Image (cartoon, rainbow, N blue to C red; front, side, top):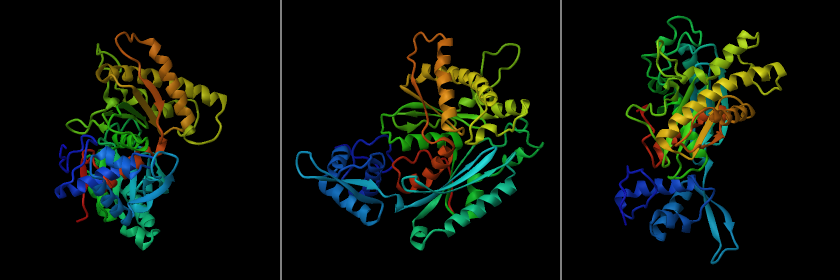
Length: 406
């Protein structure tokens, strides 16, 4: 048996019966249960390589600690009926915060990332004083709603935010000099200070990618390109079940891809070409509200025609970026999610697939493109996974910056 060290999170592989890696074995079992829709102790034993006795001891301890629970009994198979072991959503509570250029979201979630409470705040641009005051007040109000038992299981806050929140000031029409104020703000430290809670930070698009990876129950063989269509465009890369971070955490920065070859003029970046900001600009030019496509109402034919016009340009840009990425990674899947509602994202994905025909794809295998599962919640849910990962996770590599209240 190959012995795993506690910090080795390259794949499931096998656990170890050594006392020195007790915490690793616990995290390994929690990770397997978390990415399964219920699993028996026998299957846990098979997947980990641990002895049946070790698995039973760890599972029973985690059930006693209310991290896991016994689910349905499966009958009808050869041998004795087996009881499915499941992750207990009430086993821990965390908060995920998305800080964006147009809005902020705060979600309180359980161990399975089931959303228990949510609050939203929209603005023309993120004023740091106003925004941090709102975050501090909102987090305090949410925590106050918890029982004493729930408060004892509160494990921290994860923030998803652009790493260059101070950029593109003119693009979002913020007052001159306002966005640059974010340049020297340590977001994780500031949120930790105002909430007095352990706080972690991850790039917003990477956080959305992390949420997608975890919520689909993907194992170590999952590999896909990920795009998040928000105010600007962001993305991520998942290889063999792990997010590719790069040296500085900027791997998958699809918004920085140039939209053409350089000639007399420096080409624009993809950050605007397939972003909701461009849709907002089009709405304003046509006398519509900037947030016309943010609601759940039915749209007029004029509005849908405008959306289709934006989707045509955005879809073509995304197709270009996907084919560029596919030439490097040769992946089966591409996931496109965003803050627009699901039916609008489906129209965008359909346009992307149509746009593939405009390019010479000889030598490339076209990937399957699908809409993400989480929409506008993806970034905040991804943020909420950070304290969950720190407390229970097998893979610690996604946590780049942290602030401890201690």
